[in-house]
Image 1 (cartoon, rainbow, N blue to C red):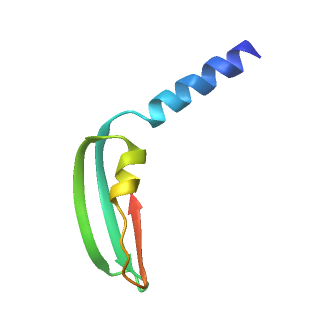
Image 2 (image 1 turned 135 degrees about the vertical axis):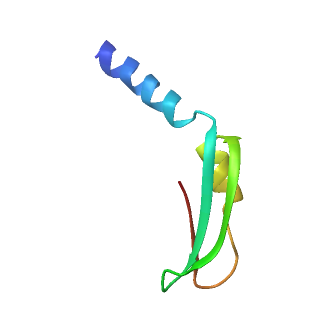
Length: 62
């Protein structure tokens, strides 16, 4: 049980590390709509910035 808790903290810690991230937004047909780079940012913060209100566009953070 103790190992599971420690493992969980390590995984959460690595997931929230600040890294360089890429925001990619694509049309429904897969063609590129927009792409930008973020430096030294957490995945949570990058996802918050990587949004659009345009119809038919989906954005992902890598």
